Image 1 (tube, rainbow, N blue to C red):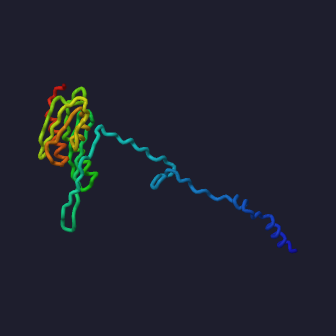
Image 2: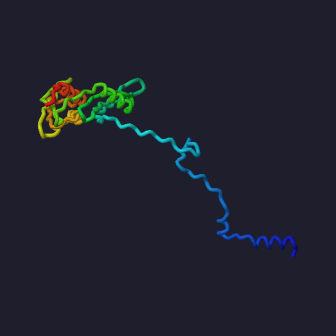
Image 3: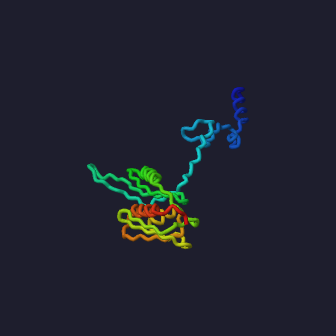
Length: 199
């Protein structure tokens, strides 16, 4: 046999073609995909976010209306929101916000409520000193102190009194209107009528 051919056969016999040998072939590993998202610089830790501050006021949306306005080319929609905010310690406010976007309307309503916030003089049991009543637009609201009854109220009156921290009262709406904005503002007007002295 020719020497060149003999060397080729020997080299072919010494070469291991088993699957185990094929697995030993080193394959370059892909770079680990950690928290480095799109736009992140490799090797740098993600920037820590500052904790979002919790507001001292609780807020409740009591009415949302979508108002359509007919214009050339179609209808344009606006949103009207009524928000009540309070700290449940005597401070409460009602605000109205209107915008083409709900987030902007909420922001406007919250600012309006903070601007028109009042301080309610509460008794030692978080009730009111005496009976009060008030009328705002088409709404007429009356509130009576009632020891041991808790908060007996409905509609927007309950929301305003709850966020103001008022308990042990009974309320009555003397009109048939369902407008929550005027009911809430009538409640605020009634709370404004409370005397400063605590019982």
